[in-house]
Image (cartoon, rainbow, N blue to C red; front, side):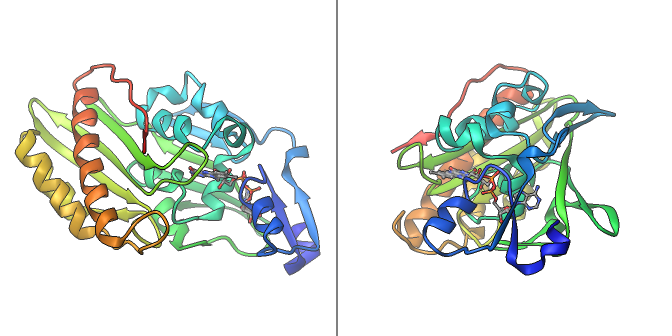
Length: 278
Ligand SMILES: Cc1cc2nc3c(=O)[nH]c(=O)nc-3n(C[C@H](O)[C@H](O)[C@H](O)COP(=O)(O)OP(=O)(O)OC[C@H]3O[C@@H](n4cnc5c(N)ncnc54)[C@H](O)[C@@H]3O)c2cc1C
């Protein structure tokens, strides 16, 4: 249908980004193609060491899923998006396709091995997440393609992650956020992936911050060094959520907190965590 209707048509998933944009008259599609009537597109499955999410899977389904809880950082993300109403309608596929620079999913999923399955008239293709989102609100999807599934490799033993966003209240996007995924070897950090949210046009991968942890003992000093490197990697815009300097300081402090929680989880501790509300 989307291929037949062309430029004037938009896919509708949870409607939690598209409908507000239509109300504001920023989007004005002539046709809505409602994915909610398509059977079999909402699911959470474990397949060959990966978690697979159907594009129409709601944030709330992921929040309450035992399967998804295997990867703690995924639960952190799903449970913290906006409020219950938004989580009950909004979908993981819609979030990734929207590529909102303030969205939570891309930040978290970019610290994991994530691929996006796309389906179009020419068939299927699978794209790594970091190639799928190329800019703010810009993805590799062609006009007649949709996202059908998001696949995440389950991290191995001695891995742990944490995602923390700072928000002015529940039903708003974060002012800044940090996702940290670690692999430990004894007391040392074997591998680290760190992504920052709301401080760039896409999720910002803080590679120097990761380098500050690799091969090191995770302690106050190394966490502080990684946080400083994250501050330098951030490239925020000033807006109603704060100045650029404020967001740089905020994201550095979120990275530090997330490192400590991720390390405790990698050691096998059950650590409950939620976003921070102003
Ligand atoms: C008050 C409020 C607060 C919010 N706060 C947050 C927040 O804190 N963090 C956060 O991450 N998000 C937040 N959101 C956004 C929410 O997570 C949305 O659910 C999400 O961004 C879009 O998902 P959706 O299913 O609602 O997509 P829709 O709004 O239906 O669609 C969004 C866009 O993606 C396209 N699309 C949808 N599905 C597909 C698909 N399968 N393939 C290709 N294209 C597709 C649509 O055509 C449209 O262009 C908030 C929304 C609201 C209303």
